[in-house]
Length: 322
Length: 315
Image (cartoon, rainbow over all chains, first blue to last red; front, side, top):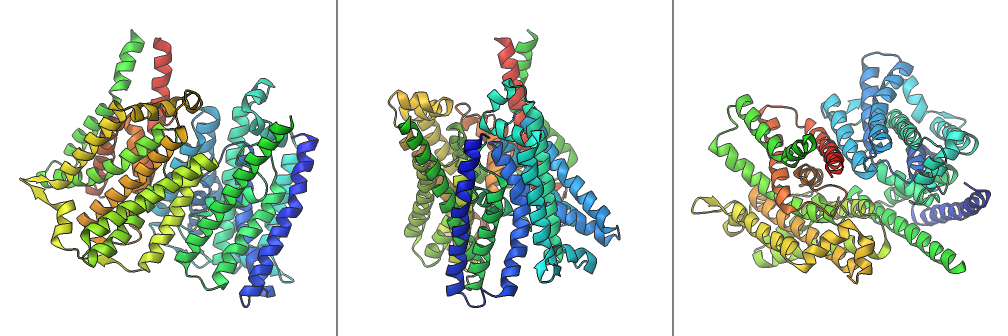
């Protein structure tokens, strides 16, 4: 990413923040009890789960690809961790077992896409089905309920009223930001996303970068799954379904377009707050879950359409200027 | 010579898979090769075949349609409410119209706005599933009259009507794709959309029409499905999308577009239906089904890759 692109991306950020404030204002005026400290912290908890998944999604979209399997990985890791905890395995060990199992899906994605050059859409979509199915098989279709207080602290606890989960999510975001801006891996991700062929000719092992990114994405999704289990105090085998869609939306709102090689993770942080606020606000306005699904789907697709049109317009303008 | 033999094997790999599947299932489960089971499987397969035809057309133009299962649910739920109140013809017409509209919206969003087919149809998937839930409000519609049930479960001279309907759809679609200019244009778009556009073909209109046909086929399959099931609810048809993708790919229509055809999809759909039926008969947990379908998709990608490799070498 050149300096110019970076500046252009950072110039987008205030706009996204204004968008978030606009949505917050609208919901505060229309929904009772929306603008209370308790509810805002609730939104922060919801956003922190989404934020962690979206970081992985942002990395894959920066590569010019996508990872549709993150939602199912969340369910799978959540269920495995939950079952481990119920079999009185220690908390860190259960989390590690869950994350390792989830990363196998990422390894499969990365191997097939990065090293075997399969189409990323169909591979991650097929793996989405496989991971979802495995989550159901392992839990036998049942929710794993009730965990110890120390495990729940991570997703549900707070220090001076600030949720622990949001602190964790923001630190992970900071870590990924460091990774993308200050390491060789990060700049390689941008290069591969910008133009894979050129990156290969420039001596970058593109397959390896793709592989690593997908594994990282699956690890982040897995951690988000653990956070979700800790937050809602139960591991549901289909809890993660639909998160991939929210994560794509959060990434696009955050200013990372589908083209690849452009954007960054800072916007994704705010994007996930916007999506979480939307979900929470619609809930507070008293819409039933089916109507919420439809509305959210509709809003997200509108946001994506707007983003794609905007990108198209900018490209045309750029060509005209030349 | 070695490559030629390999090519031959790969060309007929699908038949081989189907035959191996049939033989092994016959040995594994005594209930498999019975007249009752086979007719039951054919009934299931015919619905999957209709949905997979739509998916095949979408994949040939280098797209995909993830919304087919939900469009099927939405259109059949709306149709069911009309049919239940006695308006048979209106119900079917409205159901088909909803499918057509959903498909056209997919096509327009993909061509005119430039969204990737995956995202556009995935959005449509959530929206139409949500609308189906809103429309039904958590209830079910069941117990249709005899005339409507005849469409999906009737027989004419011992032949299930469903099979005749599938044959009809097959004939129409194979005529359209293999014998008309429109059909050749579909393949041309799949091979190279830019070249097709530059040679003066209105590619946008063709892609939109392909997705409209998709929606129509999904709605048609939905109407047959509720007629066969004698009930309609918002959550039907969830596994049709993934199954039809698997049926198309394992049938030999490659994901890269511009090749394959609906004839191959029949074999793919048969493989998928026998596989799922076999798993049910062997009492394997239904939770494994999605994983199996996912593995079939990955397997067909491998076959596609290998056959491309050998084709390249044999030239």
